[in-house]
Image (cartoon, rainbow, N blue to C red; front, side, top):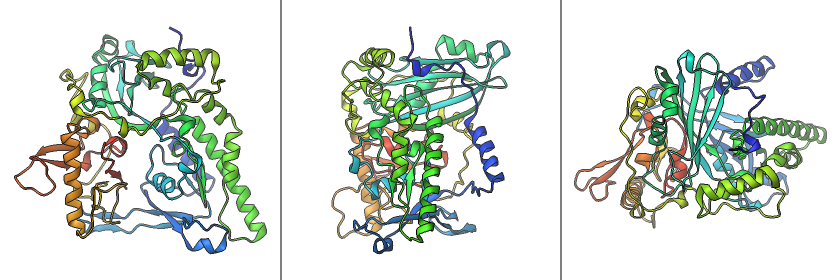
Length: 490
């Protein structure tokens, strides 16, 4: 059957993005750019005193840089011998390029109401789980690209698979599932394992060796979900802005172009402020205008209706029919724009309305249990480091680290609030959603296990265990948990 023209890959190159960025980083360092790998941005430096030097009177302040995280703390927040304090990087311009659902981007969007001020839809996401295999020479076809849709997912769930034959006998394969799925019993990881049981994948992978596993959310909201791209002292670029072309399943080209345009605007604005000897915060509004005048915006606008066309009672069948007509003939030249109605968490149905999914058992080495896969991710967490996946009132750095708090909290200590928050989480997520995160997380981070009678934070004999050392930094939990009470921190 004909595929959308956006999915044509003739003339493209297949490469490892991690290797590409390492090479590009080396080029940047040769040009004098300082890069600090291993130091994560923990919070924005927001200067409220800057209000007095500008016409801004909204009380939201100006971004003046980024603070990095403290390292060398144990799980209780005590300093170890390896302790290093966080650093504050002051900057005249701060460009956020964290990928989908970044921590600093969340702070900027919330503090400056970047979504509300332009009436942008909620961002919606897909969860991508992938593996890299070294296949037998007779199964290796360098440059071949395969995209799939439908099975193993049902007709109501948006998603699809891919196979990329890379260099040196390596094959990347994976599955992306729209996180607006309703069935709380769905497991992205086990869907990927089931997909490999298909005869095509069995033949491709027979006699091969799996060498890597990983997972990450991607933006799927399109142009409808792009917030205001600038704020006092900085801007959003790349996937922090949400510039993925969903039908193309690519966003790197848009991210690079947005970075170029943001750099040009930054340079022009800094020159202007120097000439005027001004202390005003940098105005990055011209960057947004430049992006909307570029081919990036034209590309995103053309495909704006394709992804949301799958969110109808007709499921993938209705989406395929509309997307075929739009991508081949209409090309987005229509007076309507389909909207994203609600968040991915809000689309989750209660367990009472669904039946558990019966997944086939693993058939090693073709398919394995989740912990075997996690061992191939190359992520490294110390067993006693602070838990970076925070429920309300459990952070060492703030009184309330999450986006929402359960019920009335007046008159309680922080410890009591933390217990109440954990109990609330277990009550809702186990009682109504059958422990969704225990299946949705592609790294086995979350477990709802039996609790001792009267154990703090438990509900109806169940308690939450967070195995943060397994985390592969995909951000799914922050997005999909129905209670919206988990915050991914650094």
